[in-house]
Amino acid sequence: MDSACQVVTVQGHGCQIMVSGVFNWQFLVSLVLVPTSYNVIRYVELLGDLLHPFIFYCHPHGNGVFQQDNCTSHMSRLATAWFYEHSSDFSVMNWPPRSADLNHIEHL
Image (cartoon, rainbow, N blue to C red):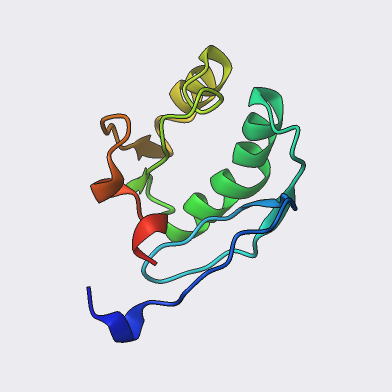
């Protein structure tokens, strides 16, 4: 990777902040502050409140693809059922756990 495209970061020194956001090559959505007590119920709420409208806006014909990591709340029965219920609106990319090569955040 070109060093001109890299930025040095500093850890939060004990502070924790978690945000959730969606992006693709054409559109961006504002970041949303997520409580540190993030759980599967909050994740499914975020899917319904943020992801579904965004993907429908970007891909109204149901041809969008969503990529997520394999953390526990993302792979839970509740989240999996939500994705199954909305499978006609977009598909979810399957990818192996701990695969940094496919992690889009790591390459920003």
